[in-house]
Amino acid sequence: MKKQKVSSAVIRRLPRYFRHLNDLLQTGTVRISSSALGKSMGLTASQIRQDLSCFGEFGQQGYGYNVEKLQGEIAEILGMNRNHNAVILGAGNLGRALIENFHFEKNGFVLSAAFDVAPSIVGTQIGGVVIRDTAQLENYLAEYPASVGVLTVPGKVAGIMAERLVACGVRGIWNFTNMELELKEDNIVIENVHFADSLLALSYMISDTE
Amino acid sequence: MKKQKVSSAVIRRLPRYFRHLNDLLQTGTVRISSSALGKSMGLTASQIRQDLSCFGEFGQQGYGYNVEKLQGEIAEILGMNRNHNAVILGAGNLGRALIENFHFEKNGFVLSAAFDVAPSIVGTQIGGVVIRDTAQLENYLAEYPASVGVLTVPGKVAGIMAERLVACGVRGIWNFTNMELELKEDNIVIENVHFADSLLALSYMISDTE
DNA sequence: TAGATTGTTAATCGATTAACAATC
DNA sequence: TAGATTGTTAATCGATTAACAATC
Image 1 (tube, protein in one colour):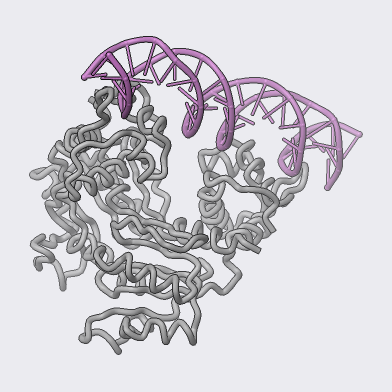
Image 2 (tube, rainbow over the protein chains, first blue to last red; image 1 turned 45 degrees about the vertical axis):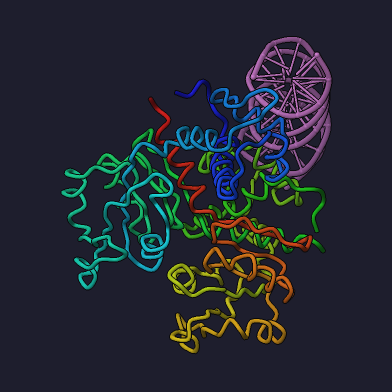
């Protein structure tokens, strides 16, 4: 599907396009030009056209882009229509926050299960999702494969759990632990959400002026 | 302190340097060369030296860098020694996850208070932090100023709460809501943690190969 | 001292911006 | 049709990498 090697800068902008197009749809906007979209997102019109041209021709001269169509195209590019399944490992505070408040389905994912080691919560439900025993991870994923594992476990077991997920055929790991995962396998995608890195960048930026 | 305009790419790498140097300290490593550090981080030696040269001269020819000293310098650059205070707005799942599990103090921050609107939790403590009534935000911050506000409130009040924080003198906002904040004020730093953007980037990357 | 490694300048590479012919 | 706006090619800008004199 991909025409060429797409740079990571472009990939990181795609979800923002999707989000902004969503907003436009909400407000009933039917069409938008690259320059108008750019203005609202703080990008140049050129950059938007250049970005989109990595994937196809979605606009029309003299008209611009149909918002709904473009949003659909970007959803497709992002892989939102592939019925990706996800499982969460670790139903502590953060795991629960994701289970209850994060809208997996709005992002094209089905959260099929969550796992934890604490007997007190195994078997309970959170936000409609059953918490299973981590010991059952392999059994479960053998029956119900998932493409993404969400790591919200304590850092010290992050590496082990990551390898277990990969052994079960997971293609990507959404890593919320503060550990840098180093997998033996190739071609597994790791997406880190390092809170500390984010806060420290903020710290730098507010400490800047003096 | 800053010698020049530092690019955002460099700023984003600083926390990673800090983290890796921490790991090296843990394992008792005393010195390291740019090439060894680069190898372990997946960067070139050139890039590391180039990055560090934005801030000063921290190495020694023929020797490399003293790990402890370099870590200290980067902590200083990141503003980790400035006794930044933070307050959390919204003690739902995500807010609680941050209060209980995120180590603000390891990143140079003091989490001084949390706020919520739910009468059922106002006045209680979570992980040693008192949950206060959001109505008291202005009173509290007038007495105990904070440099960063953490937004873990529902998206629909994110904008309002952000403006209230800014009016109270906050310099930066750590935004965990899925809203794009647009402040009236200039020179306020917004650091977004958009879970959806992160998952969608992962979705793209695992959907890539076919 | 000789070997190692820095900080920095120059070269290369890639990403962003500008320009414009094509065309709705 | 005339005006608007695309997709794409060329120009510019910035970031990464390479090279090397300085020196510990």
